[in-house]
Image (tube, rainbow, N blue to C red; front, side):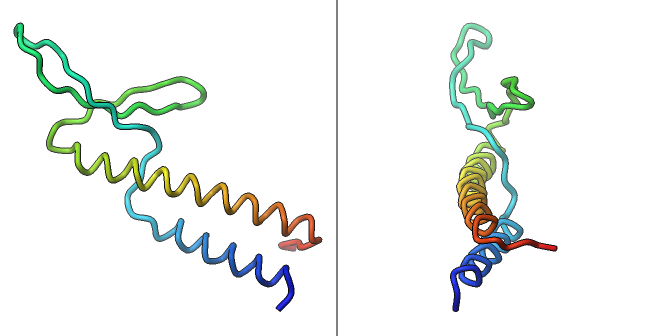
Length: 99
């Protein structure tokens, strides 16, 4: 099997993994506290960048576990997209075209 075929197989595997990824989000889950009625209470939010601007999205305590899992999955997808980009770069350099 030549190099181009190996790269295409790797690319197809990564595309399948990305497509099959469960619910995911980009960003970081931040856990902090806020004063409510003079008492410190836990406060959670998702910090993420949209068009170069940092945005925060409130997360309820009931949703915290799901958002942590989604953010971890998002980091994994981001890493896979980086690998996919590297493979595509090698394919283009090898003369492969999707045409």
